[in-house]
View 1 (tube, rainbow, N blue to C red):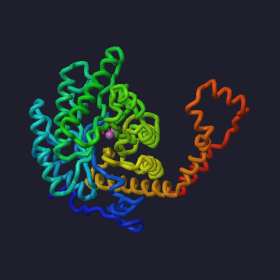
View 2: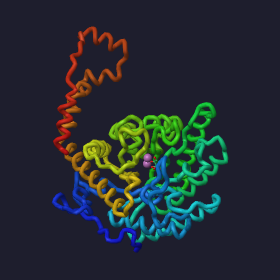
View 3: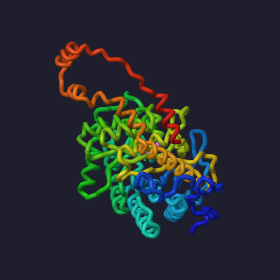
Length: 433
Ligand code: XLS
Ligand code: NI
Ligand code: NI
């Protein structure tokens, strides 16, 4: 045991009557919701990067956090792992997620990076055996080091493409070795700053080829997990190629990968793209590519990814409503891709941020389940589209313009608008919160 979280108890469910900060009021892991324990609905994961690797910087100032493991050595990486697993256990989360660069010291070259990663993977393996923790997903950080400043797969320099492909292989190997349930690719710097120096057509082909190679490697190795792309607009490059779910779907179709790759949808990225989180979730469900979620909260005024811990229960109810309508998670889960504010220096801030986020998710899930079970919202939706379930409605979908024209003339069709009842439905939703 390290002494980083000294004095902080293991967090348990205590219900609404508890007055302890270190308690769950809604997240009761074994409570059954719609036939399944809450913990199996939510499948919580902690993100290694924000909680243990991020130093607290912003564009105007550097490190505010002073963690004893902030040192680029193997001993520090192991101390970081010890503390991380202690946090996972205090919270009782079943999963974690990591990038290679979060967990290992940066090596002088590719070979040293790989050796360092393998040593930490073995260390993780031991800890996972001891604690029962599982890996929700692994990924490669192909955006922090300066070699990736002009992109990874989409870099104008083929050597960077090669370095990236090799790094992805080592990270997929690490994920497979640790029994990971998914492998994630977030576009990082796959995008551009100015068209003046960019061959967009070529860069798209490079990105498509890289993804095909990832899928080939998945099949070659027999990896049973899902390959997930994480859409994000306008950060860090001005024009990100994986802008949102719709853009990613078009890209997958173009490269014949729409049945091979799904999406990891992040709340903050949806907001930055000008969508709601539930829009992105619902669209992914309708397109058959819903995979997993990165749970956080984005500031509505700032134009960048603030990665705050989630705390808006009404928004989360609508999000988990779409997750439940998708049939829930299969390989996916709820990963807290969220970081503390840079003034939240104390170890207990890290714990309480997750406690609040987990509780807000659980409250949202319970509200969503009640809405779905009650069926009033779905009944209103069904009623709104009822015309399409009649023979006349159905036949339109297989008809043609000329026949429809004759039909409208013959029947004297003259549509009468009906209320969309938005306020009534908004009131209905509030009754579950
Ligand atoms: C950055 C992304 C990143 C991915 C993993 O905005 O959210 O954290 O989840 O590379
Ligand atoms: Ni993310
Ligand atoms: Ni993000």
